[in-house]
Length: 269
Image (cartoon, rainbow, N blue to C red; front, side, top):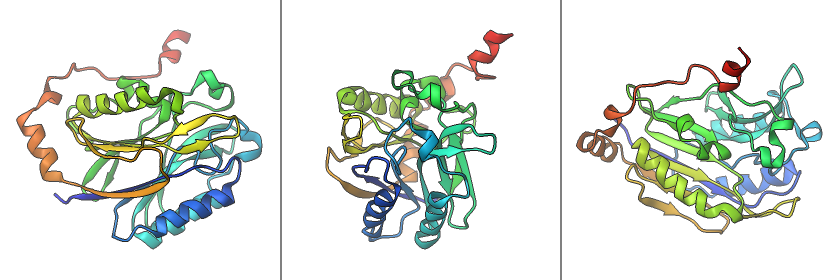
């Protein structure tokens, strides 16, 4: 099976300014000097982590989706990250978009909404995980606060994913949790794990420390970038993943359960 080359962009996000953020992200993407299979951007990469969905939301045929399609085609790579979306029914979502070079796309609506910031009062929670097959790899993309909930990140025993990734606006005040939980998710799921965060200070005066990282299935750092604005590209080795899982087949010993429906639906019955 082939290796997978992945890139991520860690940058400051201009508050409520999609055009400025497209320009800055485009600059970093243009600096990727080698072919890559996957380009990962932060959570709410056009606006910063905002609750002003009424004024900032786009539709699925809006300018950011068009921009992502253009980039994916130009780089022959999937591009992913989350933005604020309004659907046909007027519901708002913190939606991760998975845009392929041929223009087709999938999406994942953030499941765990951050009630401390009132995210649950503005956005609708998702209830389906996304696991994408891409160039021989199975990839599970999630969003920020999902990192704190290991059951939602759990690797299926029979068709495990190979790469787990989180796009985030994770504040500097909780950076210890970010770094600790990324390592835990990598180790417990025996998967390469990536966390892509932003830096700087947002319109609510929250500081972000970055700490974007790529870890192997042992929980060892392959890349950790601190708080600088940067783009990073690395190649994940399929043979290393398969050899480690063969030597340490912990997934086959996992407790056999699955989530059938969100707990809120059970409580209503």
